[in-house]
Length: 67
Image (cartoon, rainbow, N blue to C red; front, top):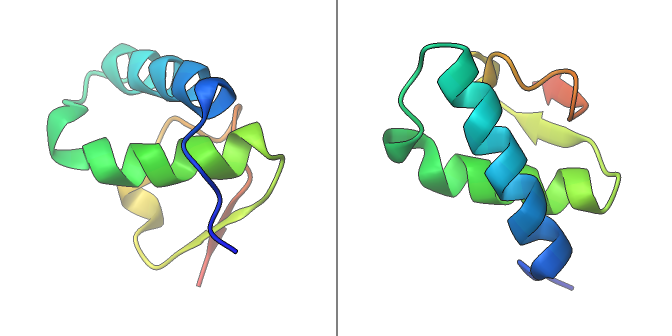
């Protein structure tokens, strides 16, 4: 079943955007990746990705698994 972008994930998304901004990066081109990451983080699930570099700076909030 798909995991919804619920209120908890939306709050997590805001946190992830702030972390990306703190890292000096632009969150706009990564908005969909950040939404997926927020869903994973808010449900305490790891995020499996082939583009781990796109998620630099989020390791404190999210378990990123590069594949």
